[in-house]
Image 1: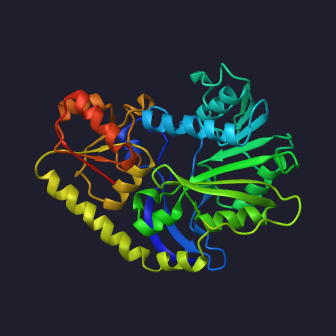
Image 2: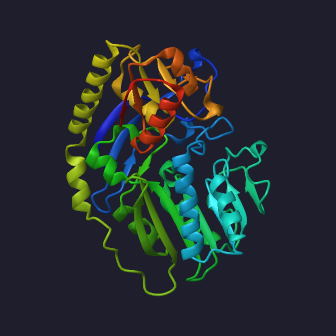
Image 3: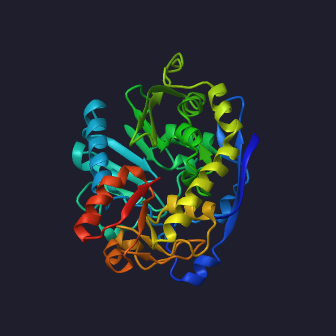
Length: 377
């Protein structure tokens, strides 16, 4: 792995709920050293230390309070159930979070579900009305064969430092049939590299996949890759596949060459500095005219604040997830507020941490009667 980008002192978790400012400011930190494999195109944080991260009941990652996200989720499930005939089947989700996607799979197709996630919170009752159970533990080799017809894994593989055994374990949970299907969703890393989306580079994400590198990983672990898609405003990469039953499948048209990825990593560090400098200028100039507020307190915000490294320049962060309110940003210590508090803050500028929510945020600002300039990453 050839290292092409380094960043030190990064908070090791960005979705952990922190109860006070002092703990947030002293939050554990680690280093990022992104390495590139010239054989397969895989990008990984070679400085990642698994023992520094935490996935527990304190991990609050859900996006289910956004109407935009819920509409996407519902549409995704309806498409998978209809197109792949996932009805009255045994399904599993690896990294099921709080269970929203697994619940939709079971409700929409009349399926029976099994989830894996150490951060699952059964008190929220999301799976109460469906035939599903969750193992509150990590998924990996040795979990046993459950003969599942469909296995989903969304926004989890990027958290896994050694990915091949993980994918192999997912194959072992499936029925050994060409009709069994696996569905994986990860951040689309070609966009991160091309656009220098530095807000999408953070400690928990130790593995970065492009369409080509993701497909090559799955073929190497005994899957035929049947479909690759880029969704959610170019942010998500999805893969569908089935256990290889004969001759392995050929590469798909969506797979880029390793040389294309190499071109993007060659000057990534320089473009990172340039883009961070641009946003530092925005925050500095707008801050002279009034408060600058971040909308969204998750991973993108933690990465954005760490990269800008401008203590005191951004004092307020809001989020629509009520479970995050009153907690503090890891590393920088801002208290997370509800959007309604913007009527008191009276921001000069609001920066949306994800452009796909810009219209939704604009409607919320109008509803609150908050007049401000709205920007988005």
